[in-house]
Image 1 (cartoon, helix red, strand yellow):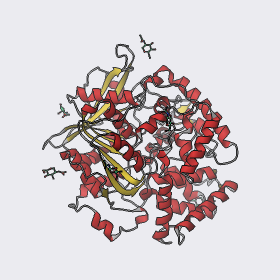
Image 2 (cartoon, protein in one colour):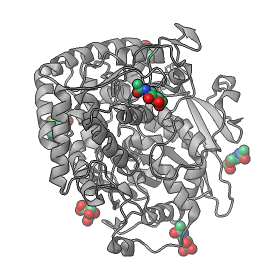
Image 3 (cartoon, protein in one colour):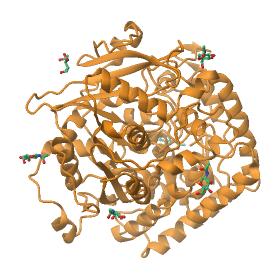
Image 4 (cartoon, protein in one colour):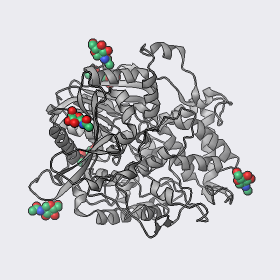
Length: 609
Ligand SMILES: *[C@@H]1O[C@H](CO)[C@@H](O)[C@H](O)[C@H]1NC(C)=O
Ligand SMILES: *[C@@H]1O[C@H](CO)[C@@H](O)[C@H](O)[C@H]1NC(C)=O
Ligand SMILES: *[C@@H]1O[C@H](CO)[C@@H](O)[C@H](O)[C@H]1NC(C)=O
Ligand SMILES: *[C@@H]1O[C@H](CO)[C@@H](O)[C@H](O)[C@H]1NC(C)=O
Ligand SMILES: *[C@@H]1O[C@H](CO)[C@@H](O)[C@H](O)[C@H]1NC(C)=O
Ligand SMILES: *[C@@H]1O[C@H](CO)[C@@H](O)[C@H](O)[C@H]1NC(C)=O
């Protein structure tokens, strides 16, 4: 699901080393919603820091040569060449699908990469990267080859920037540009449980932020909900000449898929729902099931670190409990004695910084999104923090986009220039204008919110507060409710069965949510991947890859409850013999293996939902 959006690459590129004297590297700002997208951008542009293979991204095209505004908006799909080898269109649709005669409109940025093989040509397949806030345009632009391998290159890959996001207009932002957003973020006061009373200050800050944001967004904020986006997707598919949709939704994309399926059950040809948001819980807004497995992923960290041995896990202790105790001791220490990192004037990247309890706890919980990529480096950073060395931690968090190297109001475009680009990996504010607008989270009642936090901390003692701050706190004070709120029912018999895909332990979209959704959708099937982290793509699994491909190619469904083993474990721990035996025997397919590596690096998995 969501992950904090952070600095935009724009800011990054504007930064001139040495310009600032200090660093505020807030992790997950109050204002940022879970699904932060700008962090994605940073993450993909930075040098990877993990032990896994780096995907070849040489095909990424230079976006500067082309621009969306050159395409006139039309009420029908008119494609033009973009990003050298892709096609783009700007489609005008009603702002208010419930009142389409009203002139107000939204112009959707749509992107397509045609099938590269005409053998058994299948037609269009939609992909949504989640968020809410992820840019479908960016996903196809950066990763179409990977998706072609994953689903078969006889599909035309289609995506679009959902309402408010990226090149779709109107753009919706709480701030006028990355600069003002950064200024707001550096006022973050830490986790709600960091020190007594912070919860109350944070609540007040967030109520104010919500009011400012809704005022900036204006009336359009009422038309950004998931139901409207589902209707937009139907419109694109219809204009492509198809009655039924083929769709792969990841994370929040599963909510978009489920909403689509509930609204238009007869329009489903294939629907793969990967990393599942509980439909009812999302719209209700007060559920806490989404964090029911977060601590289990942390338990995996303790267990595997202990199993890996001292030469592989730098935070090693002989038992999982001892690893956990060591971490708790670090939290206690750093709460009272934050780690100070002094400016090193020869290293522009590392200026003055204080690493607080909030920073460390957030980093630990955020690692649960991608254990294979993050656990090893996390262990090293924690050990160094214990020794009073904060540099490795800073490096890790900057690489993930959770902290900023430096902050400056003056970028290369000059002081005061502050606007949002059309090309974006996503929009971190979308988690608010979509989620807060369509759920029933209590708006301005601190007592209710306080009880809610307590419940989350009971469900998830180690991670509850972080998940609360990311997933819930950002909706307090939000008053702009969606006009079209589809709250179910989600019981439907779809024209083709949905394939739900879930990890044994997913830190933010648990298996339980997939099962609850599945029970409402007739004929649907749950495929379980024996891994931890967010979404099946957080771990490579030949078995999962084969089922996914077979579903899209042939419509083949696995038996409900089938469990797929994975091909890699965190810390590089070798697979157990029985796990290797249990994998579906498949020909070794190097392209698919590479595609799985690349999928693991997609920014989407690091997003909040
Ligand atoms: C059309 O929609 C806009 C935006 O919601 C709204 O302000 C306006 O009142 C609507 N006009 C009509 C005629 O419904
Ligand atoms: C992409 O595929 C569509 C549908 O088959 C076709 O109409 C269109 O011309 C193709 N575009 C390109 C650039 O080949
Ligand atoms: C949300 O769910 C809770 C717990 O299941 C329930 O008590 C409440 O009535 C629901 N609220 C809405 C608006 O659906
Ligand atoms: C600053 O960084 C440089 C380059 O890594 C290193 O050689 C130097 O010792 C560092 N200085 C301090 C004070 O840490
Ligand atoms: C689809 O079905 C055909 C015919 O049974 C088979 O040869 C092919 O391997 C299947 N493709 C996948 C990806 O399962
Ligand atoms: C399908 O599998 C899931 C996961 O094992 C299980 O919870 C669910 O009850 C099964 N559904 C049916 C209809 O058997």
